[in-house]
Length: 166
Image 1 (cartoon, rainbow, N blue to C red):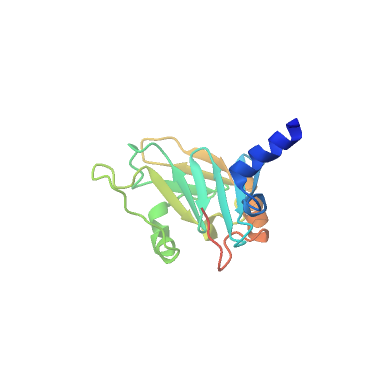
Image 2 (spheres, rainbow, N blue to C red):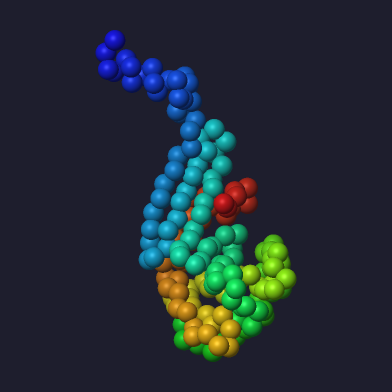
C-alpha cells in the first residue's frame, strides 16, 4: 500500500466519509490588543464568536472587566477618554435590560471582582480607566481595538438576532 493510501485510510477512520466538509470553520485574529475567534458551523451556519483580552471580555453587548476574584469592585468608578469619573453601578439598569448576570456565588465578595459596562457606554471610547475601589490605582484599557473588532464581528454575523455569542 502506498503512503498516500494509508493517509487516506487514516483520514477516513477519523472523519468518516463526508465528515470533513461539515467540521466547523474557525478563524482567529487580533486587533489593537484584542483577540477574537469566529467559528461557523458548516451545516447549521450558526456563528459563534469570542472577543477578549487579558482581564476583559466582550459578550452580548457587555464589556466585562475582571479584576482579581478577591478584589471588591462594588464601588468601582470608570472614566472615558480622561473625562469625569462615574460609578459603574449607574449602568445596572442598562445591564439588566441586556440580560447581564450581576450575582456571583461568593458571599465574601458579591462583586466577584468584575466591572460590567454596556456597549452604549464604550462605543467611540478610545481609553477607558477603571479604579476597582477607592484604594486602587485606575487600570487603563485601550478600547480603540475593541470598537474596531466589534464592527468586524457584527459584519461577520456575530450578535445578530438569531446568532449567539460564546
